[in-house]
Length: 474
Image 1: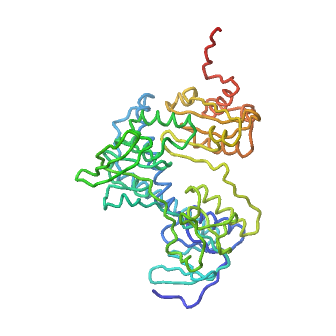
Image 2: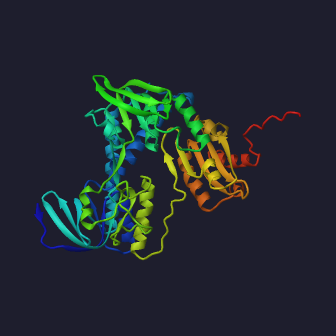
Image 3: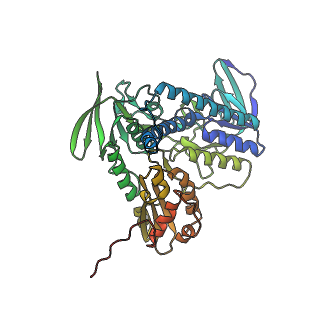
């Protein structure tokens, strides 16, 4: 490599061009700060190139694919659908390139210096950027680490097989699995099981917990939907051994009912989080780490080297782009000495399964644990007119309320329209809304929004589209 002789001065250096990094860069530039953004692969990061965008594209394709029979019921005649995966991959590449260019254009418009290369700290105020044979050094005033994480296979799956995948690999398949074993309990595992079941693969879902991490009504509804999709759902299960065979993989898993052997063509596992920090040189700075290997930060997102901040998946917390984006904007405001607040009390979990799932706030069990007199009410989407006319009637909406104050504590939904309603759920919880705040406004008709009205009217016993319980004489 060629080492630059002169260290160039920079005001704010951001390492990582994913959602957290480029949002921080643009917001800091909007405040008039001079920003240098360093990305070793492509702007948009894992989210754009391997994670959010590809996975949600597959989820969209699966939903459209399985929804084709409904078109025939509406009078739209179609031929037998066939998925051409090569064409899907080409579409994905075009979309990724288009979005990447969009980020590049935004950086240029905000006069952000974008450097391609691998960054590493040489000292507390100096960084080196390696790009091929070129190596340049920069002295900075402030730095933000936004290098994210990746998911790697647990040790038990290191058998040299080409049939075992984590989240960044499963959507790179060139053919549909004949039988995929899904191993995990997070939102990505649920999406993977839903996507491949809808596309026609046989799916066995080893849920590595006693049940899904949702409120009880959603647990029951998702279990029912898995059964309807013919997903073989095994709760409280884990893999004991994996052996590669000529036909794929021979897996032995253990559940409450003992050990079971199954032959599958592919295996997906949620994997283990690995923070992207090895090349950063932070050991030179004696930067503090958490027990799981994440970079430790304080409430201001400052590392133990206070003028170096860290955000997103590289620090402790749920690996969600929405969190990284919020943190990126927040630290940019702080670097510009502007007031800002970053609160994840009501951070929604959004799962692009079919139907989609959204959960935010407390479950009834959690609310009771915290001392609330909690009550949960559920409304089935089959009672919603708009969902009926589209043929997408699967799902429920559930709301948890404190009986003493009528304050809404949690909102949970599985069903078409959940993603769009998630922002409304968050806003209601943020404003400490009461039941009356939801039941008073007017709602568009017909629309899935009316389900939100109905579930809270059901709380008071006045829901229109819920059959009343039959009263019996004493």
